Length: 255
Image (cartoon, rainbow, N blue to C red):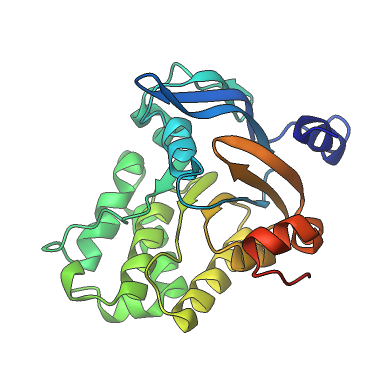
């Protein structure tokens, strides 16, 4: 059965996903890095895309944000966002936390959060302060370090700051690119606990990860990307139990 047919069967009848991607292709010059990718994410769910380095995961997210030109169709909240520039996608509720976090070393934690609220700058100041306080409540370490420069933070704290900055934009869809990259195992566990908790707020998460075990443990649904194609798709528990996924991504273990 094709990935597209499995996807169609997995969607509730009559349900419109918050994000639907149909036949997406992305090329660097004459080299097509992503070809024919179709996927969907329902509101309030965590969907993961796993795969090895070079599979096209980061390229996929960049195309969804409008950072790279692409062919195919990207629908968000029922709108075809293909013609939308990055700024309009962010204002509409799509926010990317990039693989390298893209923090400014000489800016404080508080300044980063203020920067994250730029897309909501027309909202009342009291509403922005409430959002900031919510972020600090979710990430107490950021509250403790609000006056520190980003360059002085640990790897885990930088990832928390990247997430907090993204949440200041009040996203409906959060695109996470390799949030576990470069972090110690105990910190990775903390970050994925935070990601799971974000689902309870109603935000939809598209999680791109090389750490397949952690990603499938937290996600509701998953896609396996291989050389730019969706090779497998299904509920995350089913993918984790699939011997092909276990052999290729989970060290040969099942479950």
